[in-house]
Amino acid sequence: MEAARTALAEKPPSLDGLLALAAPDMAAVDALIRRHMDSPVPVIPALADHLIAGSAKRLRPLLTVAAARLAGARDDACLKLAAAVEFIHTATLLHDDVVDSSQLRRGRVAAHLIWGAPSSVLVGDFLFARAFELMVGSGSMPALEILARASRVIAEGEVLQLTRAHDMDLSQEVYLDIIRAKTAELFAAAAEAGAVSAGAPPERCRALRQYGQDLGLAFQLVDDALDYSGDSATLGKNPGDDFREGKATLPLLLAMARTPTEREFWVRTVDRRDQADGDFERARELMRQTGALDATLALAAGYAASAKAALADFGANAWRPALEDLADFAVLRRA
Image (cartoon, rainbow, N blue to C red; front, side, top):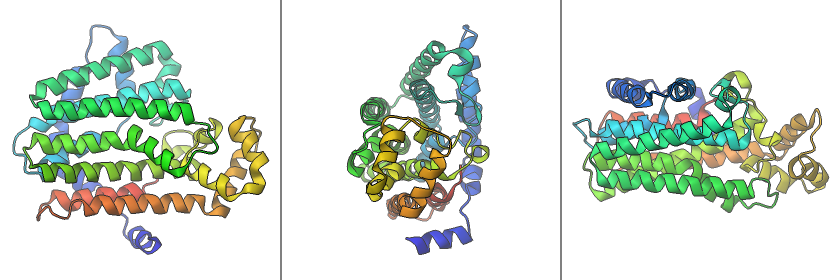
């Protein structure tokens, strides 16, 4: 696995090919997003735009479009679904930032600090409603069912994380269940809905769902590691937020399990969240010493490889290598 990461690092993957292929479709998706953000209540488009405008790559709707095209779509049925996916994602971010008291999101001051928590929550609700209008407008009942189910699963994952967020004895298995629900499910649903909108056979829909789920797991695990190894300039948020919140992510769980002599430090900083200057740096050093960050990234690389393997039965198609590059990008990105 390390050899694979080294090889990729020597020739870093790029999203340029995928972005170029999807450019016309994504321009249409952006137009749909802008149109459906509109409201006679001024705070709604202002607050929504604050967050949505900060999303440069729009990976989840991009995945919907790419999956549809890989599956053979020739029409624009996937575009409304892609816009709906972006609204679902943005709504969950607005809600998450209130729950987590986040300070930054996508390099900008979190919306709740500008407009207040009540407005952020309610605009999130508005975006969920818009998402369902777009899904209905797509005319695909199976795709509507996929994204509706995903919305429910994401909410369950968020609640599970909230109830177990500071559990120092959380198992890796349960943690993966949490991120599979709260993060990977929307990636999976985005890809599956795209395939369904293209009229792909069930086995192709399942394959693209698997690709999306494994891609989402890789992304979240890398996010977990970047919170301890990145910086605010590249991340678009403050590094160490998970630590300051006492949030049990995989690098932290592994580091705690591998440093039993540091139990008192972890109880104070994570369980009681009684933190002092230098504690975050000490936590990062313990993660480096124990290999917790490397282990997290290795697991992410494994999921990225699994995602690429899910595309094996798709024929020669410009979209396939572009999606394989996306899986590699998920592992080696720095933001």
